[in-house]
Amino acid sequence: MNSNLILHTNKLTLDNIVNGMYICDLHSSVLKNAKEDNVFITIMNNINSIAVAVMVDLPCVIITQGSIPTTDMIKRANEENITLMSTKLNNAEIAFILKDMGL
Amino acid sequence: MPKYYNRYNIISGDLSNAGYASSDIKKYLKTLLLPKHFIKLVCVASYEAEINIVIHSFGGHIDFYIEKNTIVMIFSDSGPGITNLYEAMKEGFSTAHNNARDHGFGAGLGLSNIKHVSDEMVLNSSCEGTILTVKFNMPKGEWIK
Image (cartoon, rainbow over all chains, first blue to last red; front, top):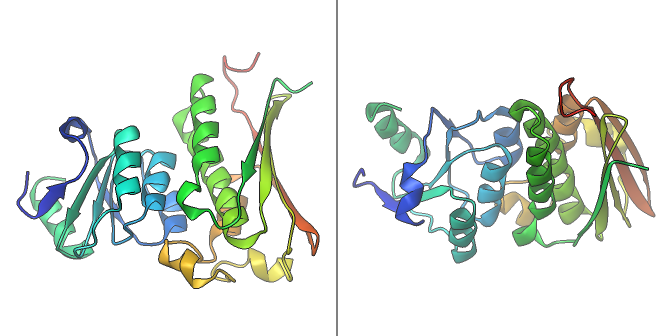
């Protein structure tokens, strides 16, 4: 895994298959526009980001700019088998890295 | 009699539990083997409306049922009501407080999202409460019996 990313959920969640990404901090926009299997990149480190990911089948959530996921967020992500990661980078920086990784 | 009926209580201000009713609705729809894109539309409407009750109302509930191949969701709360329905339906208009915005809500997109994804949407509001009825016609297929 890239050194910029910290994994918060159990290692099994790394088996999730992703395709493309959606970057947004407004949950309504995510609900409307994100596509199934997108990586969801956001600064919002609260449980609602996971709830949104569950609704529209986003298997991976990356919390940016050094925000630390809350414990209830990590618990819910594990329950829903969603990969939850965080990074010190901002939304755009991590998106470019994921693009270089082939996403 | 509806084929399936469920009622969910929604607590005002409880953002950390917001989405559980919609999540449960999604799980049920999955058991019907409905197409994924259709389930997503129902879930978007359900989640937006559930969050609206949490953020804006004194609390309320969701009635979910399926009748004659139509999914019906009725979101009702006990006030304070929407002052101007016309404004509320506009994209970008929001009366959400800062706590909701800090959680990624309050962009003023919720009701227009619901209108966009649903087959029928009826919104009634007074100071005693708001009732939002959202309907989806189930796509044709073997899940319709």
